[in-house]
Every structure is written in structure tokens, then in C-alpha cells.
Amino acid sequence: MADKRTYISACGKLYRPNFAGDSMVDVGTVLLVVELALLSFTVIILLQSRREWHGREELLNLLMATARVLTRQEYFSMVREALDKAEKSVYAIVTGASPGVDDGPLVEGVMKAISRSTKQGIVLNYLLPKSPETLEMGSKLSKAGATVRYHDGLVVSDFRFMVVDGRYCAIGLPETMGEKQPTRRGVMIRSETLADMLKEHFNKFWNSAMDYRDYLTAVVLKLVEENLQISPEVISRQLRVDQEEITKIISTKK
Picture 1: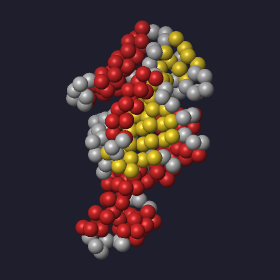
Picture 2: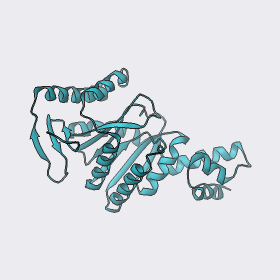
Picture 3: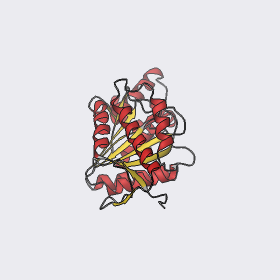
């Protein structure tokens, strides 16, 4: 019987991903095959439908209901493992929400994995929604070595993902719909076809997105313009970004 480290491949098999040589095991029941088919078609419909995001709540509810999902801790563990095993590239769209009270160790583990990957020359590109509230996470990702951009047309309220080496897709799902809802469950799928589709969706926003540093600068200067007496310390506290970054932006614009 599969344990908690067993995941789903898009071709209808269970596997334990080791990224060096996956061990494949035939599905043992017709029910699981049906569930896998529903999962694959749900993701494909979600991304290719001409009504693109219409009815996405119903589709994602179906995805959550039919997928063999990971717990939040298991999901973050799988993300770290995927980052450590990446050989070429990682492309991700995430909420950029501030970590919860109990999420510190989980987020820190991911940042360390990102840092290790960038030192090995892996391309790591992250897209976040354009909002001052996501600058904290953008700062963490940027410091870890990832390239971070922001787009105001990005919708991640109920669908977040990471594509690794064009083969592995980590899809995060919230408990309830909403952009500020944290990822509570997730599924890891091995499928080059799905990876290509997700990468295409990613590229729709990437080239016209705003670099983290440029966006942070724009937000900081707007706050200063609205209140000439505001200090770097206050801005730092408000945005949850290191005061040193804020001070540098203000000093270079004087």
C-alpha cells in the first residue's frame, strides 16, 4: 500500500519521485484510474478552456476531491525536495502571502533549497501578484537568489504551481478559495504535457511583469510622496521588508 511519500503521475501510475530514476508501480484498482483521469482532465480544462477562469471554483473543487493530496507539511517537503533535485529550471506562480505563525520553519526550508539551487546555476523564476502585501515574500525569494517579478493581472486565488525541469508539476490548493488563503493541500504530478501548459501560462505574464526591485522602489517612493515625514523604519515595518533595503532606495532617489 502506498505511503504518504507516494504521488501521482499523469500517465495513471503511482510513483515515489526520486528525480534520478523514478520507480513506477501499476495502479491496482479501476477506481484510482478513474480518479487520475478526472484529475488530468480537470487541470487541462482549467488551463485550456476558452472561458479560461470561469467556473474555476467548481473545477478546482473537483480537483481537490479526486486527487490523492498531500498535507501542507508534506507539500512543502516535496517542494524542497524538488528544488534540491532540479537540474535546469524552476518556474513558479505563488500567492506571495506572508507566512503564518507556524509556517516559519517550512518557508525557511524552501528558501534554503532555493539558495542551494541558485548556487548550482539553476534558473529559478517566481511570479507574484502585484500588491504591497506580497513584497515581504518577494524580498525573501530575491535574497535566496530567485528572480522575482510582479504582475497586476495575475490570478492565484485558487491555483498556484511550480514546474521543475519541464517534467514535474507541484500544484498547490487552498482550503477555501481566496488570494490570501494559504496553500493547505497539494499534488505532485509528473507530466511533460502538463508542464508545457503551465509554462505557457507562466510566460503569458512573465515578459510584461515588473522586477521585484523596481516594484519595491515604486511602492516606497509612493509612500514617501504621500508622507514626506515617513521614516525608513516605519516603511520597513509596514511592508515587512528589511530597513536597509528601504533606506537604500530613499537615499538613492534624493
